[in-house]
Image 1 (spheres, rainbow, N blue to C red):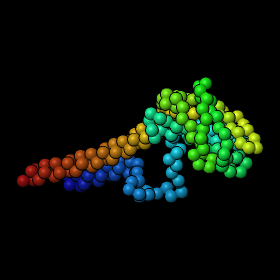
Image 2 (image 1 turned 180 degrees about the vertical axis):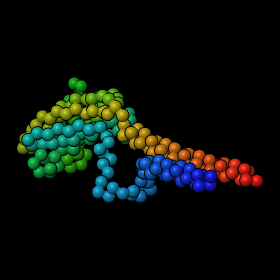
Image 3 (image 1 turned 120 degrees about the vertical axis):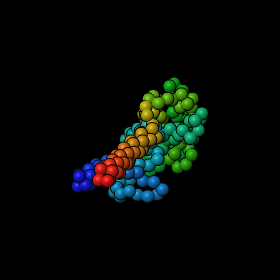
Image 4 (image 1 turned 90 degrees about the vertical axis):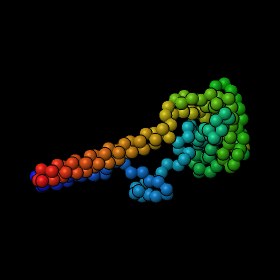
Amino acid sequence: MNIQIHRSFIMFSILGIGLLSGAPVYAHGGEDHGDAGKTPPPAIAIAPRATAQSEDFELVAVLDESQSKNRRLLIIVDRFKTNEPVSGAKLEIDAEGQNTSATEDSPGVYVASFAALNKLTAGSKLPLTISLETTDTSDLLTADLEIPADSFNETEHSHRNTGYAAWGVGAAFILVAIIVLIARRRHQKKGTQ
């Protein structure tokens, strides 16, 4: 009977450890839990963006939502062949029939604000037509600024909750195994007296 109790405890412990080892592990506090070869995506990767390119230019338009009531569009422009930032260009943006000019914030980075940006909601798309003029050439680029239906933070939060649930199930399983072992030992001691 004593051997059977130990086998049951070992079986429950192995199952509990198996559940705990299957739970995802998250890095925190500057720690790195492996995956040294993987680089995390840059923070700008989660912001809604639009891209366009031509023979001369390429641009990335990123929605800056740091001010919820006054969204801005950051437009990074560079030469397609050399990746050299395009400074001193004249940018005109047409969005939903509204034309606006972008001002240069830093070399190759332009900023524009217009009403259509503040109307964007999750899952929406804003077609952009961007007129670009430099001292030596001009171009017309089109892109769609898409707002994802679900945000990165919600996805990350759901993954964390799944991890905690797996840990909780594993811990509960081990706790039940310990309670069963203690109950059987007490029952066994009463039977021998």
